[in-house]
Amino acid sequence: MSEWHEIPGGVTAPKGYKAAGIAAGLKPSGAPDLALIVSDVEAIAAGVFTTSQVKAACVDYCRQRLQAKAAARAILCNAGQANAATGAQGWADAVESTEILGQALGIPADAVLVASTGVIGQRIKMEPLRLGIPQVVAALSSEGSDQAAKAICTTDLVAKTIALETTLDGRPVRIGGICKGSGMIHPNMATMLAFVTCDAMISPHLWQQMVSRAADKSFNQITVDGDTSTNDSLIALANGQSRTPAITEPGPEADKLEAALTEVCMHLAKAIARDGEGATCLIEVRVSGATDDEAARQIARTIAGSALFKAAVFGRDPNWGRIAAAAGRAGVPFEQDHLRVQLGDFLLMENGQPLPFDRPAASAYIKAAAAGEYLKADTVLVSVSVGGGSGSGMAWGCDLSYDYVKINAEYTT
Image (cartoon, rainbow, N blue to C red; front, side):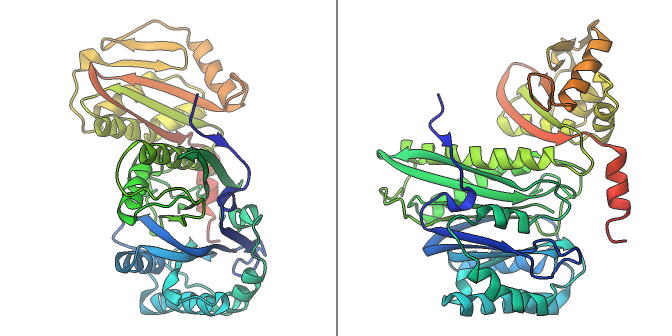
């Protein structure tokens, strides 16, 4: 039995948080496009950001702020314009956003973290933003998580949210999260944004370590199209309002909190992969037998990101050779004679040798999973073993459909 259970509320499920999402006029469509998350008190803040050399102003700003002080009160996110590759003026826009929000909330500007998503090379539409910030502040609510989750979406088909409750020292602790992402998704902080709130009390150093490790097991293990974004950000707040004893060093309570944090991030990461642009199903790749966990995760990422394998899944073709080939080019040494490949319940390869299998039935398995009919799931499960090592890892992706090309061929037109 797990040590947590799911609860409603998203980022406002933990104590001491409010959120809101409004349509400020940043998107031509008129859809919600400005989200705000606020902690009642100063919260410990941690972040993981894109590794791209071309970064949005919000990424550079948040990195600098968190290096200066690992604390914050608010996260402001605009959708519609990525404010990436926008030069000095883009930086000035990000800074002005924090100043306007700080004044509206009555908090220091440096207590505000910012995020942006949308078209690269486009500055934030500042006039709508200036008018929208007082409106989104006025809309803040302890039940505003769903509105915030919708306001950060771009090509997403669904809003993505989760909240879990566990106990520390016999008292309830909650972690909530929202995220967005559908295209331009690939490991190394795969345009992906995620915001996590928690009401535990924890030291900044430990919280950053937990967030980084959780990202490695979740957001850094998803891929839709092999493109890492300029704006990828995971920002996590912990405000201590659960009134549980402070976690200041590793131990059982820290492990329990990290397990729940990782579960939140994994749920959100899988939701992104499942909602991949044009996708019809989620692909989950499980790798075992590697020398260590990172080696296993690297093989899993490579398989999940294989365009050939993704296309085969869309075609409902159980072409296991593409799985084996992706594992072989992952950059992880293993003996070919130890390779084992399984698709759902169908064993396709063992000890490096192909096995006879019911091809029509395997194809039907993929088709049923894509239709959400196989055991009521929409996941195509791939299991790979590469030896007798203790390393294991998972990665998630989606199939590659005709619609992916259509969506991205027309993205700015």
